[in-house]
Image (cartoon, rainbow over all chains, first blue to last red; front, side, top):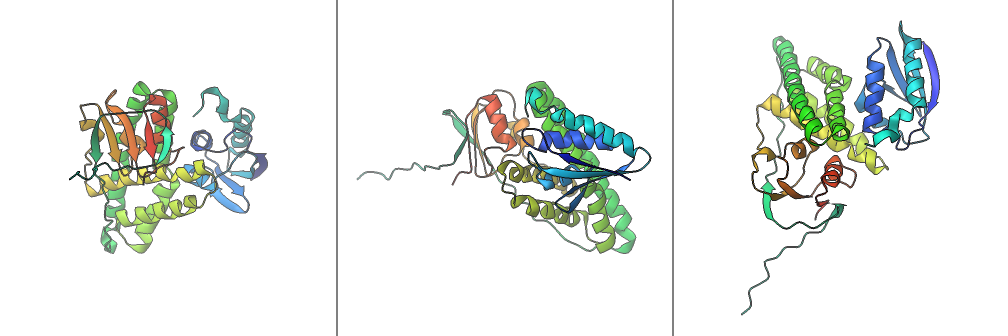
Length: 92
Length: 214
């Protein structure tokens, strides 16, 4: 299992569009992905779970990936966080 | 003797500013009573299949709306339909609902409602208005699946042909995307906040919308 800490860096937090991007990214991989926020753990391939986190900007998250492509999942997520979920490109 | 003024004034939140004068089209509210029945052990498999079939039909419907949204409203609104399609593929619906049917032997409508209600309860308590309003998206998707399960066909806004002000208890984003171009002069609803997608859509269509009327 691979584990990494992130901070939500985009303007509006994990709202519908970034949450969609997140789930689309994690769903490309076979590894199980979990997101932990304040001890609450949700399935990283569930958009309903992500929206239920109500993760606004600045929220710290721990993400774990478990499976054959776990390193690749986190690499893809690194990229997504670095791009701030393309939040400022053309709004929501 | 003067007649009493028949005017009713309703006030709400200006979700999209402007003035509209026109004929009202009142969308009747459809409050669906959720049936509950016990599913015999031998019928559990076919009840799960019935649920999966309804999910599939809802996805087909959503793909059509997605393509239409893309054409009429552009990429940013079509993205919402993208999120809806992801909700339809969500483990909460594809795993949890099925698990409830299998373990408690209840019908699909009831199992689905339990999962949706649980989600909504969490979302209702959010302080952030944006995240709180996402419960309408979940409810919208839930109602769509229910309609396919129960065989209800909703009178859609597609039937409007004359320019009208659309008045409803609630307008879901898929409702509004079903409206023909140029037909909506404005929206007025009881439900909804400033960041609900219907409000955002009205803003992008530059037609006035009042939400949260009382």
